[in-house]
Amino acid sequence: MIRRQYKNPPIEEALCELRFQGSAEWDLSAPAQFQERLRSTYGGKPRTQNVVATNVMAGSPQGPAALAVIQGQAKLQFPDADGKRLVSVAPDLLSVHVLRPYGGWEDFHQRIADALAAYEAILHPSGAVRLGVRYINRVAIRGENINLRSYFLCEPPQVEGLPASLASFVHRVEHVYEDGARIFVTYASIDGAASPEFLLDLDVILDPSAPLPLDKVMATVDELRDRERTAFEAIITSKSRELFDA
Image (cartoon, rainbow, N blue to C red; front, side, top):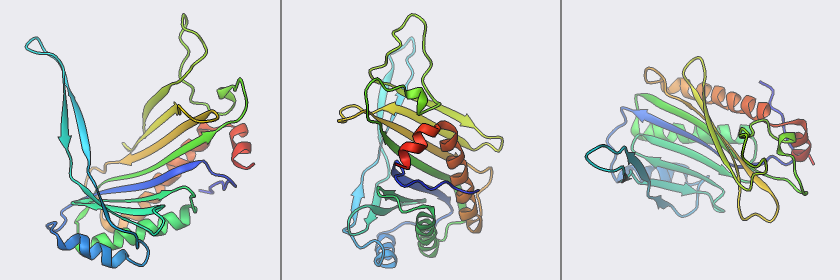
């Protein structure tokens, strides 16, 4: 796939998350080995990210609905010197993050490959059970009385009987590919910005039917990235492309 290059890409964050099966037992030596292997690229101070998940329990005749808060597995993050690039690791999980300014897919691809090689060398997983490529875009549009349909083709539907003018919105849909991969598209307004700004979040996820061999992971990541690019170009218009090339 030939990817279009923009002078001012709207990418706020790009990330790739890989989940594994059959990794060696996680102990305190694993983070130290990661830090040593990645020190030349990610020399910032390591930090811990606590993950909290919520689960809504449906109501029943015996009781009302309830919200359960679950403490997830903490991730260890290894940032670079300015905190714009980082790798997160946890048992059976690896994620690579690039914040604005985005340096292009070739650079990001190599960072993913390097992090995967380090994870494989330290924990020897038998395969990948989930692969995800996600791009979070932040689009600022200057002007008044903006017609969003001239920039995006994923507008929330209008409902007869409600005002046509939207003050704020969050629109999220899930599409399923023929091979079972999914893409989650979140389109929303961003409150509090000086000028109108909008979120366009594209998250492509594949849960293979059987653990994917590690030597197939990077080719699959490339395929997921191609799907994300295809979706992005399908959603935006020529007016958006002019904005990104201004």
